[in-house]
Length: 280
Ligand SMILES: O=P(O)(O)OC[C@@]1(O)O[C@H](CO)[C@@H](O)[C@@H]1O
Ligand SMILES: [Mg+2]
Ligand SMILES: [Mg+2]
Image (cartoon, rainbow, N blue to C red; front, side):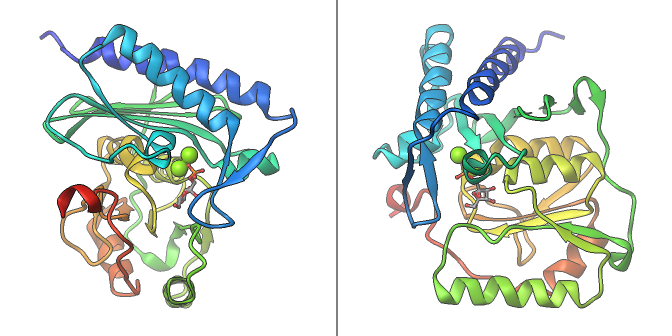
């Protein structure tokens, strides 16, 4: 059967690899670091350059497609997911890592049609790992199939999460309460790559049982979330119920046993939605 989005997916892989080269080249150059929503929400000229590189090359090939790009939204574009084919781009997921040369930095490209994810590409460019998933056709890393962990016991698990880039005292308090609850279960360990996209790929690869975070954005998770489900994992809201990619909350797990156990321990809160302005 003809796959009408295969061309687009092939292009996403090609452009993610090219973007990764730009990121690698820029890694040891002088970086001008700027800030966005808070003093710890970093952006560099490389983030902006890579996003433009991806958008321009997609526009040339697919002129009718739409975009949600992290740096375009930061520059004032609306963050609106319609039924049109839409590329959801995080040019550098892990900018803090990039700035500090901590070696987990990803280019993340999700693609959605009728608000359904069709493919996801996460290129962990310092590890040279290309994670891909096409809806209904599995998830892969450098063309090797991925599958989630089969662990059902939370006490035998490693869980990924992040502190995020909000330093609002109430948010920080909630994050630490959740972390203390989960560490005390006890679990084997907590990890965080500093990139939501890579954390999701770690769930898909079976290296951690789950990843949860409150405060992420749609561009952090659009690609990686499909990689998790195509590797056999599940996505939920942190309170249970269906995930909403615009809600800034996600729980990705290998199975419902692990997910349900974590939901009981997570102290949830609700940052402003990514699409808040357009839904009002
Ligand atoms: O800003 P960037 O580098 O694209 O996103 C990095 C990131 O810190 O943002 C999320 C929190 O908002 C994190 O989990 C994610 O890894
Ligand atoms: Mg990001
Ligand atoms: Mg980014």
